[in-house]
Amino acid sequence: MSSPGLLMAKELEEAHFAAAALPKEGFDISALRRAIGDIGLDMPPGVRIQPAETANCHWVTTPISDTKRRIVYSHGGGFVAGGLPSHRTLLAWLAYYASASVLFVDYTLAPEARFPTQLHQVHDALAWAASNGPSGASDAAGLFIAGDSAGAGIALAALLMARANGAPLPDGALFFCGMFNLAHASSAFIQAASRRQSMVEAYLGDLALVEDPLASPIRADLGGLPPLLVQTGTMDGCRADSAILSERAKAAGVPVTLQVWQDTFHVWQRFAPLAPEADEALQAAGRFIAEQIGS
Image 1 (cartoon, rainbow, N blue to C red):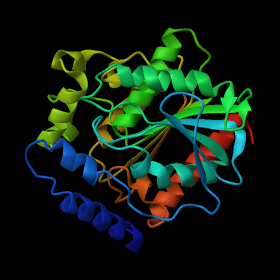
Image 2 (tube, one colour):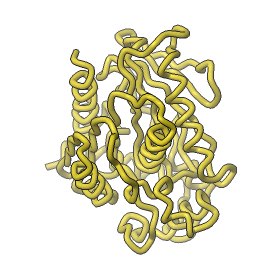
Image 3 (tube, rainbow, N blue to C red):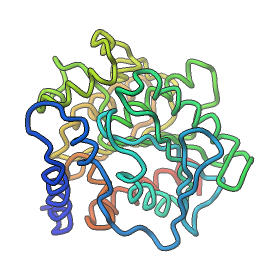
Image 4 (cartoon, rainbow, N blue to C red):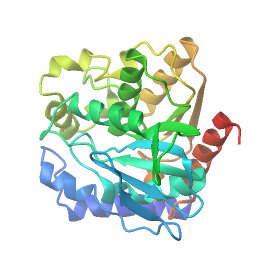
């Protein structure tokens, strides 16, 4: 059964969509960007958000953040919306529960920039964070990549790019309600709302690219990736993406932890601390990170 906080979180999300005048049908990118905005929830005491010394990035830290334990984060929003205002509470609580420094990648949205621009921006941020932290140049003692929804797909593709380039891989990856399949014919999430197909079109430009493993990384060879934490919910429209990705990763020999949370909706993690389920999910993310680096 959903907690009262989770029910309030869902009502808050729906209120934001209503206030933005987001149409049920059709594609209004301005309304969508208004809808996926600041949700106004509390952040941990002493949280600090500061520009990073690399393009399109900010550091999010708390007083207990280890500057050498780093998470590179790629946000959701259907490739066309979202940013620091929409995700700052998630980032802050993730930094708190993981005792980590989070490098938020504010990648260029579509259609202002198209695939694979966003992948390169996240890939470059990951490479930079390996030897740079919020206090300056220093090697990471634990490096992770993470993302939610469309941002999880971008994060996974950036990880695949790093593997293809022969770059050192992070210690693990965390995916919250990941959108890993952009093909309308096989994605129930995209089929459920016409605007989602429009988001994909804005991102890719050429719909033939949905078959590219970097656009739909559920199609990729996943061998050799670091341990994965995959979180989804029973009410998450992308639940099938998470399940299939987990199965394929396990078949490729990748250590995978799949967590399916009861009665939770798409990217409920964004609603910490209002929803206890969001705090619990981010606490689980913190434990996963600690397990991978042995602390």
